[in-house]
Every structure is written in C-alpha cells, then in structure tokens.
Image (cartoon, rainbow, N blue to C red; front, side, top):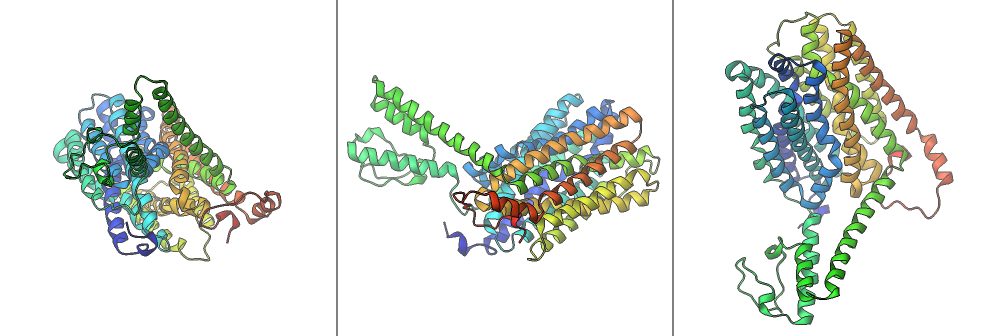
Length: 500
C-alpha cells in the first residue's frame, strides 16, 4: 500500500469519487424517489397512510439506524466487500418487493432489506472518500452524496414511466436488476490501508508461524494449497495464502496440540477474553465520543432535522393530489424537483464548507433554519407552482447531508470518523423512521396535512436553535477551565467546539 500522505486529494481518489457517486445513485435512486411509488401502494393494498408510510420511512431509516454496525463492517472488512454484499441486498430486496402480497411483506422486503443494503453503501462510500481526501474533503463528499439526489431525479421519472409501461411489479423487477451494477462500482474501491479483518489475519498468521518455528511441527500440521511450492516450516508464509484462516484457525491449532488437556479450555477462554476486551474498548470509545458537547448537539440536530425534513420526500406528491392542485403525477414530479435542488445544494455547500472562514456547524444550523421555514410555509401554499418553489428550497437546504461527515471529522478526528458517523446516523435514521408515520397518522386523524407540516417545521427550527446555542464559543471557555490536565486528545483534526 502506498503511504496515505502521497495519494490524498487526487489521483485514484477521483476514481473513488466517481465509483462512490454511482454506488449511491444506484442504491438510493428508488428509496429517495419512493414518493412516486407511495400512491401506487396506497391504491394496490388499500391500507392507511400511516401504515403504508412505514415502507418509505424504514427504507431510509433502517440503514441509518444500523450505521454503527455498517461502520464496523467497513472497518473490519473494507469498503469493497461491503459494497458487493450491499449490491446483493439492494437488488434482492427490490426484486422481492415485486411479489409482495401485502404491506407487511413490503415493509420487510423494501423497507428492511433494501434499507440495510443502502446503509452499507452509505457507510462504505463516505468512509473510503474521507480516507482519500483531506484538503478537498468537503468537495469530494459533496460530489459523492449528490449521487443520491441525481438518482432520485432520474428514478422518479423513470419509475413513473416504468409503472405505466410494465406495472408496479415490472418496475420493481427492472430497477432491482439495474441495482446489481453496485458490484461493478465496488471493484474501483481500492483500500488505502488493510481493513481490520485482514490485520487480524496477519497477526494470527505471524503468531502461528512463530510458534511453529520454535516448536518445529510436522509438515502435515499446515498445508498450503494456493499454488505455493514451498512446504518447509522455515519458509515465511504470505498473508494472501492464508486470508481465510482467522483467529478460529489459531484456536484450532492450539487446541489440537493441547487436546485432552486442561490447557485446551484455557486457550478457548483466552480468545474469548480478547474478544470481550475489544468490545469493551469499542463501547468505551463510543462513551468518550458522546462526552463531547458539540457531538451531542449535532446528534440532536440531525435527529430533529430527519424527523421533520424527510416526510415531504414521501408525501409531497400526495399533498398536491389531496389539495386538488394536480390530478396525477406531472411529467417532472415534485420529488424530482427537490432531488435536483438537493444535488445543487450538496455541491454548493460542499464548496462553501471548504472555505476556511466559514464555520461548518453554523452553516449547518442556518440550512436547518431555512429548511424549517420552508416546511412551515407548505400548509399555507395553495398553488402547484408554490409547492414547486418550496420543494426546490427545501431540497437545496436538505443538501446539508453532505456536511455530516465533514463536521463529524472536525469534531472527533479522522481516526474515529466511522464510529462517530455511525452514532450520528443512528440518530438520523431514528428520526427518519418516525417522521413519515407520524405525518401519516396526523393525516388519518385530521384528514389534512396542515398540522403535520407545522409539527415537522417546528422540529427542524428547534434543532437549528439547539445546535447553534450548544456550540457557542462560551461553552468552550467553560470547559477549558474545568478540564483536567491529564486529558489529551489524540485526534489530528481541530476540535469544532473551539470554533476556529
């Protein structure tokens, strides 16, 4: 592997950006334009809007709630294997949804299976992009995350046409087949450093090799069948030849040598103890991350923003039809308008956040406030043109999702990015899961979207104020007076709480 400081901000990194962009486009195209499918499911299954809304909320929320697990998978196995596996999940879930007999089955196939696949893609693409970029990280993340918006723009129109030509089932089968191209995108994701899984392999292999050299085992104790002609124990074994042998092989060798003795059970307990220590360190690291006030404020803000800003993606078409502003989905749906505006917002905000004198947290708080105001204006808008404008405004400021990885890196550092980002996305996913069902229940209760959107807009505005107030410089001065001198931050990034 080449040293990371020689490959950052260019070279193969731009191939990573293109591959990650396409991966997010293919994975999130259908979930982000689920508002086009939502009226079709209402008509097909004749369920309430609150129940049917669980499909769209789960597909966006499950992957984010599982972000800690997804991030751990990327840390241990690398972005490439995770993206390949996610391609199978996304494509399989979409194709399985074509045969859904009811909403409950659709909640599992489309909401959970596709949602988990999208979560794996999101964690893999953002992590590997952050590894390849430093000074241009904001721009790179902005380009990558526009893949979801471009996908939503294309898929909203494409799914509408496919439903007319082939029906709802045929549409889901076709877009599921297209999602298999995620495996091709994974081929470009060359890792800068060995993932944790392979590092464990290497450590176990070196430990086994040392033991065998000192104990002089027989040639039959370890067989190499990967084309190597060397069979002497003095030969240094290549890591690639034994990538499949992990700690379990190490344990098997030790227990085989000590079979019938008390030491075999002791070896098993030793391995279990190592695993428990690793999990304890992981949980302690999560606890330390949540001790940072800026990180806690950011998690609360992302939760409230997700709770209020995601429902329009699912309900905006139904809002227009319920108010009698349009009889059916137009040639360019409101979802597509919001998606292309989100694409522009991600690029613009990604460029702005790289400017040194712009505070990324305050920029995020401003986008939340503006988006909340747009949500509050939706109930009093009585024209289709007004909904188009508000969809564009809300979509543009929803592009602040491209800032989440950037801000997280500034708060906790690159070394804790995947873990902290997983925690952050857990809060975001929880908000996304709750938002659409709550809005649907408000409609089932009042037969109007007005109260629901007032609630959503208020949540987003409240989140903006909380984020702004809890990250003021005065909090940092109070902490600096009470901090113990033995506490040292090892991150190579400046703390955002210092508000440089």
